[in-house]
Image 1: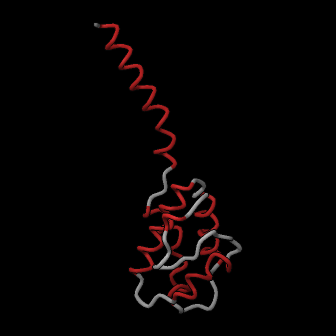
Image 2 (image 1 turned 90 degrees about the vertical axis):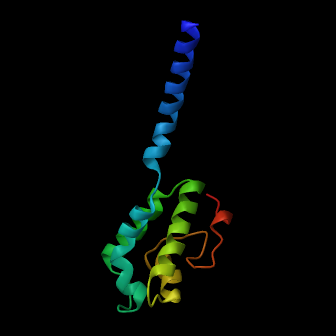
Image 3 (image 1 turned 60 degrees about the horizontal axis):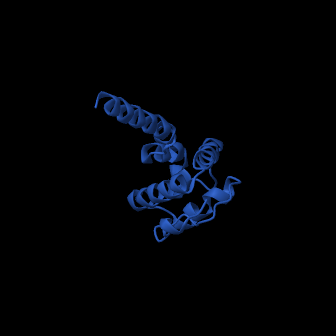
Length: 119
């Protein structure tokens, strides 16, 4: 009986260790917002182009979101943030990745279906 408990404990520990890298690499909405915070002027229309700092954040965020799950999470965060920005210029939001030299497989919009995003 003690041997079974030790084996079960070892299996649980292995499963936790195998899952740990995925938990560490997960993208949070707070990270998404933090990376795009320098873009608020452009998104709100007070500047005609995104700043260098904004584009660095966009590029970093795109680099961070590699898996389908991470891209969907990022998309949902972007949608939530877009709904929360008062005076958001939707054309600027949609154009932001391209203005920063990033290609996305989806349009940044409050109507985007994030579940359709593939890696």
